[in-house]
Length: 81
Image (cartoon, rainbow, N blue to C red):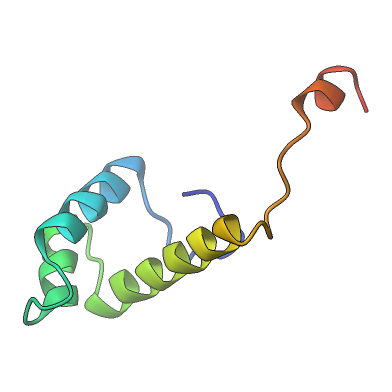
């Protein structure tokens, strides 16, 4: 999730995978959703950190879906442009 809208705390690949799995398990209607997800992620993440991480992910997805993220020009990068 390398993004310009990353939350201030760092997230390991393992934590991101645990975050994704917990999102699938604890849907919007789950009581104490963010606390449950924080517990599943571990690493001392708070419910607030988890919620902010989710909001950053939502912004990234929205930017991608609305074409606000430029598609990389791999050919130009390969040719030193």
